[in-house]
Amino acid sequence: MPESPYAWARLFAALLLSAIGGVGMWSVIVVLPAVQAEFGVARSAASLPYTATMICFGFGGILMGRLSDRFGIFVPVVAGTLALGLGYFVSSQATSLWQFVLAHGLLVGVASSVAFAPIIADTSLWFTRRRGIAVAIIACGSYLAGTVWPPVVQHFVERSGWRSAYLGLAAFCVITMAPLSLALRRRLPLAAAASAVGRATAWTTQPLGMSRAALQVVLVLAGLSCCVAMSMPQVHIVAYAHDLGHGAARGARMLSLMLGFGVVSRLASGWICDRIGGRRTLLLGSSLQALALLLFLPFDGLIPLYIVSALFGLFQGGIVPAYAVIVRECFPPEEAGMRVGTVLMATVFGMALGGWMSGVMYDLTGSYHAAFVNGVLWNVLNIAIAVVLLRRPLRAEPAGLSP
Image 1 (cartoon, rainbow, N blue to C red):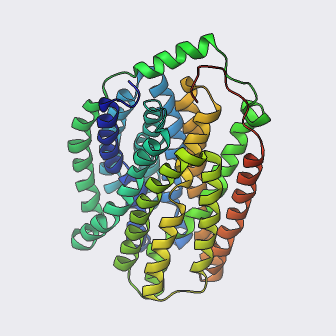
Image 2: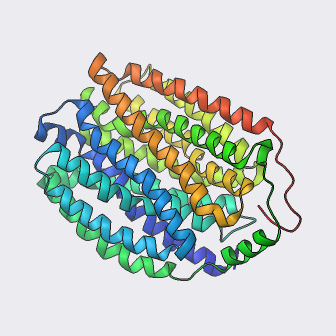
Image 3: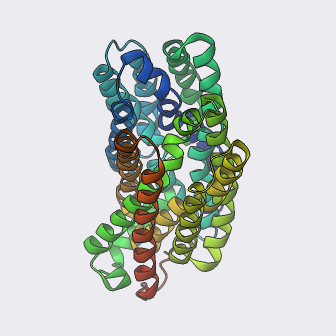
């Protein structure tokens, strides 16, 4: 039942599973310098495994979301767990960059996606009055993964090499995620009830004064633009710190610090979202993210980079969960898996596109200055979209149906 003790217990089991399964998004960032050195490629080419992983992660989120809508979240979680272990094993055996790219994208990327959008969508259906904070908590899974995994992976890369580290990840993910998936076996009675209500009482066909398809496209563009901006510090901070002479290990700690403060930001934004709504939260988070990106331009010392990394995490953590809340405010609950998965796919594609663009700009200019400027410009586009969405009134919902 919504807001029940079981719903909260399920939420925290899903959070732990998400934090473990989310390693797929962050491990490839940490091994980027080692992979570049071993295969002897340029920085832009070494960024391709991350790009492929995030593209497959995005499409995987839609696929896993559709499976979740139809069969419940348990089935895609079990499938993702097994594929994740296989993906890390196969990646560790790659003998060329392209083998690594394909294995990491098609297996690790798709498998890790179940720990993001599908679990967020599933969680949103178990809550009504506290949906904002519940979505924020489960969305912290990816940031907890980003906080814990980079220094852990970096430690094992330095100690025994990236291949051995990947073999360890393969075993750990299967051993821990398989038992946790059992906590998600119960099908969602709230979803079934909401679906029945939805069949009897149609939702508005023009949320925010747009067709559902048009609003979906606008939200996809918003997700893409904000995460192109977000990707510059998150994807390249390890390489950036290494290039500045601070070392890859300190860069991994900066990433960990950034994502640790992102957890704080997501929880605070969830509390805010329950009070001011998803659209206002999106505008607030996007504006603060733009400010943090600008702060990277004048500062490149070790201590200032630690401070700015923490601020960046603190400012931008609430953006992605706001999209899930906006979707639930505007679309029927029986479409949650696909709708949330599609929007969050766009955020993942934004990370992939931005990560690759930053690598190209680095190769062309020899620095990351242009990449930071590029991120700010994409952020301005996201702010403009957030303003447009906020200025449009939410259409009245059918009586008796909570958004």
